[in-house]
Image 1 (cartoon, one colour):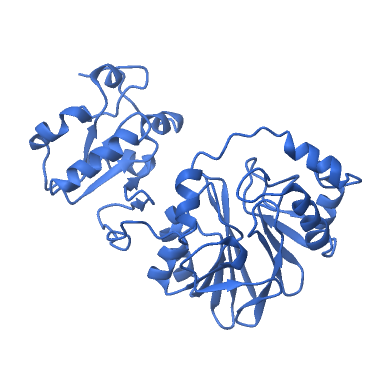
Image 2 (cartoon, rainbow, N blue to C red):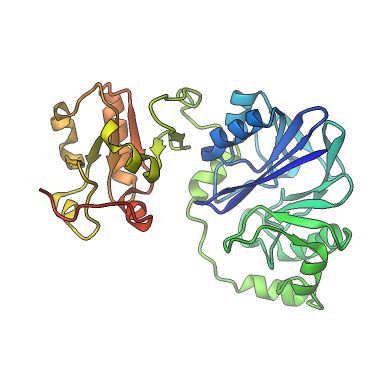
Length: 357
């Protein structure tokens, strides 16, 4: 029996796909995300599966792959297209290659256009296909960077994806509206960029004039993914802190989610590293937080208890990430950054105090 799970990373709107074989207990992951590796590994363990391969649909510009970290954690191997130009993979595949997991397999179809190394993975019975950024739900990937080519993309979709059976379910690498799956018949008919009677010239002209801003993480994600997600400093990548469910980011910062902090505030020291005017400003502050502006932290860290965990907080998470590094270098062993800072804390409607006592 096929085991299938569709997993989601909210910050990058990325889907990761788990496919497993219940008989052999082998499984593969498509497009894992670095910050979600512990989630993925936990699910694989709970389902009693063994991860054999992590597969990339392309070299991503909006998130860092979890392939390298999963290789360390689970013993899996990394594979991506030979056309991607990446280093550090265990296998560089060609169109037509297959990846087996137990009695099932995925076939590789080259679908360049969004990037040169884009592929689509097709399940053995052609009931499912994983299109990466080549074809999205009622859309497609952009073609204006990373060797993108709108003419290539048009042919990739029509020749390699739309040639699949009408009922074949299509799973994209991203969706920004909460949509999860589509089908060949739907996209062939309703896709506003590539469906219906839209010709190659019209599609190329449309894509040329999108005028999109570059992805926010492109300067970090692309170089990292060209190394299969291996960070420059990988010393802490596998050391799991036990005091809280932390997430290790590619930048080397341990993060904690707002929900956990609100429920466990009495167990930690909350360190707010904003300026006083921000602490008492419109975003407010977390009850019990200690205000030490980042510029004063080195001189005032003696005000913190080294034996209790510290959660650093700022407006959006940047200054507090710096604070965690300062504290760790000073010998604090239990330190985390509040993911998203006070902006996310407020957006998720957690309790605040608007003025200091």
